[in-house]
Image 1: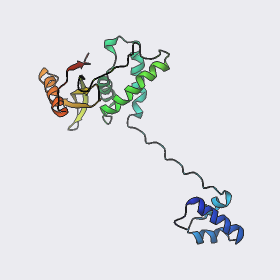
Image 2: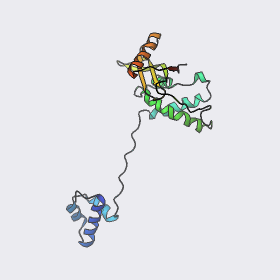
Image 3: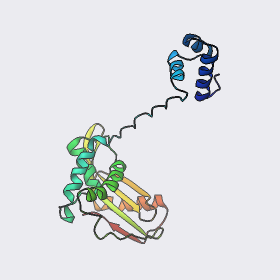
Image 4: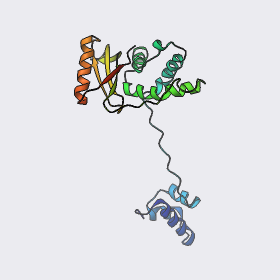
Length: 207
């Protein structure tokens, strides 16, 4: 019976109990199952559904209310004072010691929640939203902001250079210990070398 499905096993147990008058102990011995399984089979011809394991908690879960509060505050803040993803990540690490949270985790959550929060607060969709069309390799966006990381066990301020192609969304990130102009240019060279090409128009999101 080991190769039979659970439904077939239940049908066989019920048949033997009905026709042969076998006890639960004998049925369990015959089919090599626990008596609890025999009891389930006698109670119902349909095997109980397997319980799905609870979804794994994200390392970002404890900080989602904090991020939501920042995004709600942004609704009434002047444009230049609104949080970028880098700034949100920086605040999580600096103010909440969220060193286990990665930049992509924050970026993906903010991308989803920013529009949702506008709707929840009755602000409607993002104002002035126009669907954008990008040509392959024609445009890219650059961000360069400070972040906090654990470096050799010490909380250290560093600077994250992010270069993202507008059409494909492919991105390159590089961390620096300085925000100098040389580091800014080096980030561009590093990104373009890895991406293997030239970008016609690069827009900076640095405020």
